[in-house]
Image (cartoon, rainbow, N blue to C red; front, side):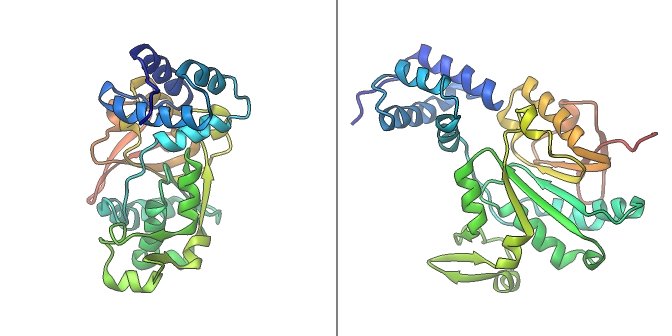
Length: 280
């Protein structure tokens, strides 16, 4: 059993530091979760105390230790076809609206963030293949990003438990997956169809290259942010989108309570948020 302890003052110092770096705010109810993972890194780095570890963390110019900590602290809980009504909205309402207005043959760009272990991005790809009648008429790029490098690696491998795929129709499961090594392996074509990248959306330098998206899925991330971080994220997403692009949030999230930059659009399948068309 570990003898390392995290004091109240230590917890507050770390909480403030982690918030500045990631925008993620840990409530006191998460104290046990945070302490356990901090102690794991303190012992792994032979730091002896929180104070000595915290010095290493703050002055590690490589960022490697912060990344290891981020990988431990972030929660990745998802499954295929989660909140399926938004995928129905994508193929029935969002993409038809975008393609009606589209004046060039540039790719349709979709961004899924956070990627978690890849279920959302792969669900988008499968849903388009199965349900969008115009898919053969358009070039589509799906980018999926996360701050956690371990989970990105897992997503790229595309190997899933029975729980992850439990909502997939049997026909879809057999079409796109093979059962191997005690789980379900997604096919190579789909793995190649999604580009997974590492990004911290709270870092202006890191998100600067993420631009010209037609659709953004950012579901159940902003609930971990405070009001200031949510507004910063909203402004970042706004800049990353094309004029007239759409954004989907989690069912318990509302952009209207965060920012006035977006228009609320009520499609038959879902409420989504649109970057206003230029000139309107």
